[in-house]
Amino acid sequence: MKSFVLALAINGLVDSISFMTVTPSLVFYVTTLGGSQDVYGFILAIYSFAAFCAKPFLGRWSDAQNFSAPYLFSNSLSVLGGLVYALGPAFSNPRSAIAAVVVGRVLGGLGNANSTLGFAYVARALPAEERTSTTALLGGIQMIGMAIAPLFNSFLASVDFNIGGLHVDPLNSVGLLLAFLNIVSLVAIYFLLPDLPITNDSNHDEHKKDNEWLLMLRCIIMNPHIGVPFLTILCFNFNWMFIETGIAPSAHDALGWGPVETSYVFGAMSVLVFFGMTVVHRLSKLGFSDYKLLNSGFAVN
Image (cartoon, rainbow, N blue to C red; front, side, top):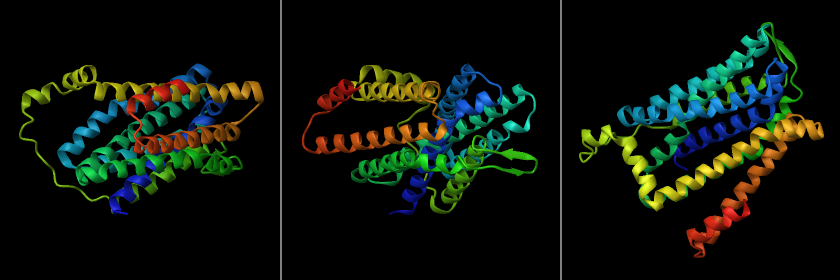
């Protein structure tokens, strides 16, 4: 395995584990600090919105100065976000405690925006015939991270100690885990991800640069080979987040489940997604058309 593939795999693994350890416990953390379930939904949304806003800036940065600096900067934000997230109980005022959680998740979202840089790095570093297998490998590793995340939640369930006057329990210890994992990712990126030669596209004139978003929107609307996969991914992410947002509070109200039990459900969902990806890959190799595969997936949903 090439060193940069290992670095990107570690980064993706950390991203998926981080997300899947926060989601099952976040509603309990927020309500313990004095927040409502509306606040819980807002914090989930603000994380994704922060990542959405930061991705274009990291993309432009990587185009202008290569990949190392954006990766190191964004991973540093994730480390800081984890630490701030853990500091919620340090504030006696509920508003301040919730604000710490919000800031922590915003920083985490800004850091998670580097998830798309991996695809750009692979596209620039590898020949066309190696890109699909490499991106499939990285996607599979992310699914593995989501599947093993319940093990981390099980470990955190027994955490109970004090550090510097801060009581660390199963809920805010998640933030310390996020900080540690992102430090590991940061070290891997620093030592294993080499910078690539910066390429300049002579055909990409200033007029086109001024209208990148318009051209992108036009491609999505006018080109079905881009628009259909775009809408498919949009639907998948919407369904996934919609279920994940409601399952923790619903399972707690109906079954009395806590973060650990809910995390096992999320892990099982990830295993099913990984299984589905494997089946789709196999059926595609056997000659099934994308039309049949997409419609079969929508029918199953």
